[in-house]
Image (cartoon, rainbow, N blue to C red; front, side, top):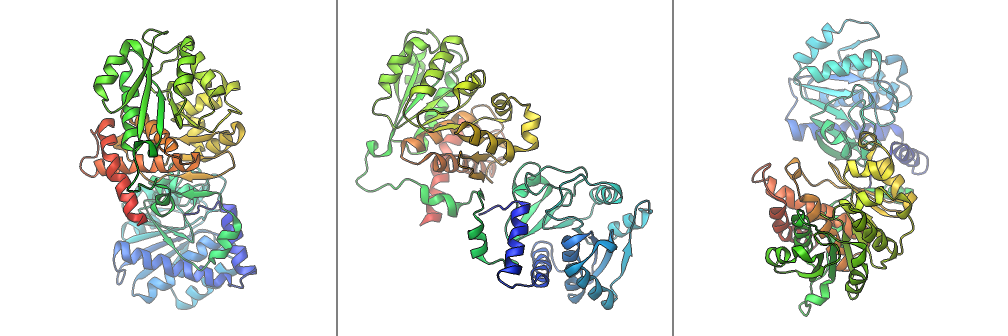
Amino acid sequence: MKLPTAQQMRQLDRTAIEEYSIPGLVLMENAGRGTVAALRQQLGEPAGRTVAILVGPGNNGGDGLVIARHLHQLGALPRLLLLAPDKLAGDAAVNLAIVRRLGLPMETLGPGDDLAPVRRLLRHSWLAVDALFGTGLKRPVEGHFAAVIELLNEVPVPVVAVDIPSGLDADNGRPLGACVRADLTVTFALPKPGLVAGRGRQLAGRLEVVDIGIPPAAVHDLGIATELLTPALISPWLPRREAAAHKGTFGHLLAVAGAEGKTGAAILCGQGALRAGTGLVTLAVPKKCNSVFETALTEAMTLPLAAGGGRLSIDDYETVAAGSQGKQALAVGPGLGTATETAGMVLRLYRECSLPMVVDADGLNILAANPEAIAAPPAPRILTPHPGEMGRLAGRSSKEVQADRLGAAAAFAREYRVYLVLKGEGTIIAAPDGRLAINPTGNPGMAAGGMGDVLTGIIGGLLAQGLDPWQAACLGVYAHGAAGDRLAAAAPFGFLAAELARELPAALADLAARAS
């Protein structure tokens, strides 16, 4: 599902009006009527109930006025609070004139006005509708707008946000000062990135998308580069399993991972790859720890490396290079450590290996300490940092990364010509050509050790099965989160990374069923 920026959404509106001759009043009418239909479906019938409608400037306020009229038609008792009536122009002004002619109760609130009546209204309302600001907001909310938003968040009344919670940056999910916490957000035409990224996922509450009449051809022609991952999008990428297939059909992954004291990371990586359907997995591991791997993951093969004792060393490089022959992909990093001799191995593999590679954990920390090595690898590279690792890679704080996750991921992927998976709530996948995707699966129960190691194995295994880097990253992230969601449905936390790996076949089967 496409995720247009605020600027792209404005362009879609203009295209619908100017090129397809759809009047702006029709779009506004569809938005308001669709919002009422969604709130009735989610919250119940409004007849006989008081609904507070907070109306701001611009078309978002105009949508609120249409909502008031339709609620009135259904027998509800809409009460309008106008915070900037002098700034309602064009189509919004037309709808203001209509509700005035209908005699709907309305009050105005300006800077410095007493908020006590607003508090009373909200406390005695069945529902509040937030129609203050739309997707075009880019500066912090201030003055009486901020005061009303803070009051709205304080009073225990359900809130429906019109298009986007007021105060939320539509492009990145960052609150712009005061920001509405909605129970239901009804967004128009398409979801906006800020509704599924960053803080927006919580602030939007339940998200419903309403068709307001934007022609599909207009969406297609705009070339929107950001998408929300959905089963319909990614299920066709699942490797087909023909009756005559054998283990060699589904690739061979070499995982360069593990060190003394961190064998579990490599084992989980191998489990992720095998559970994702990879035909063969070989773990390139310290010889000193080899018996652990052969016992713990009997389905994988091992390539014991002797030069570094309990960790991998640059002196093992030729053995690893020879071991990569006949493989389709590499996974590098889980549990490696960052010793100098290990770093030498990782950097040389990154610079010289001609196979697609996914890099995680200590592999990322080694690259962060050697940023000159990141750009222009000889084959596709997928980097899978969490926010802290992303900050080290980009030379920024994790707080700065989190403030604009989409922007940080897109800029890094483009600059270094790599595929980037920025993990966390609403994991972001960025391609060097500008494509972006946001993942909707996953849950807080996955905040446990080893989950990232499983993800590394999944993505590496999908690469080995022949998926291109974009498909492997997107499908891997979605399936990883979906497996976690299956476990969280039984218990919201306390499940382990190894259990998530075991849940992967069922999660992938769910996706396959949707593709059939």
